[in-house]
Image (cartoon, rainbow, N blue to C red; front, side, top):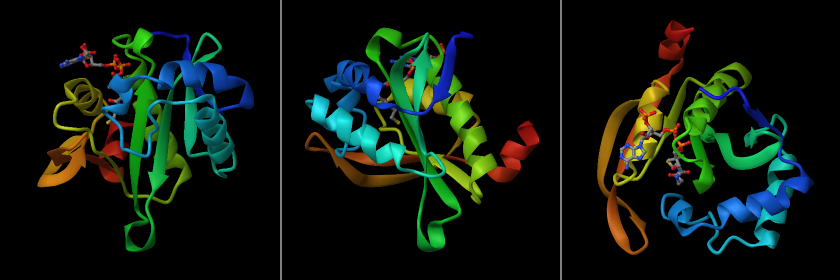
Amino acid sequence: MSQNVSLRQWTESDVDSLTKYANNKKIFDNMRDMFPYPYTLTDAENFIKRVSGDNPTKVFAIDVDGEAIGSVGVFPKEDISRISAEVGYWVGEPFWGRGYATIALKSIIDYGFKNFDINRIYAIPFPSNSASQKVIQKSGLKLEAILKQSMIKNGIIIDEYIYAILREDWNAMQ
Ligand SMILES: CC(C)(COP(=O)(O)OP(=O)(O)OC[C@H]1O[C@@H](n2cnc3c(N)ncnc32)[C@H](O)[C@@H]1OP(=O)(O)O)[C@@H](O)C(=O)NCCC(=O)NCCS
């Protein structure tokens, strides 16, 4: 595991690295449609403005040697689902396969359970996203449900895989 990776706040000076790494069809293909493609400098500026306003912080830059190379966030839901939070993340392609997503996901799970009044953290990787499912399993989430033909991405109807970790299971890992 690399020691030079950490989570930190997004800052305005990250716009160039954010645009460079986020503007990637292979990343867009595995994200919700709200993630832009092409990913422009304006998208990066708007994203950083939006996430910088959160208190407590919900979205962090994945920092490697001082450069923001990816993003990870925890998003508590609303109303009666407020005890559940979804996690999302991506890593810049030049940095894939170095364990950074796994470090980032484990860190945001710890942060989420410590800082929000939530009971469950879940992730929804696309069925074809084996790398992300590996990251999710290595971080202690378990496959809970498969909702058949629940989502559409790039014009293709896909199943919704729901992986989750409960606070009691996270506590047991501490
Ligand atoms: C998925 C993603 C976050 C993984 O980031 P990463 O930093 O490379 O992940 P890690 O190195 O921590 O772990 C990846 C694991 O998947 C494995 N893997 C990679 N490609 C794989 C594939 N095609 N099939 C199966 N496993 C694969 C790796 O071997 C590694 O497992 P290991 O540590 O047991 O060897 C990154 O590829 C990405 O940003 N993809 C596009 C956006 C995305 O998918 N976001 C997640 C949405 S749920």
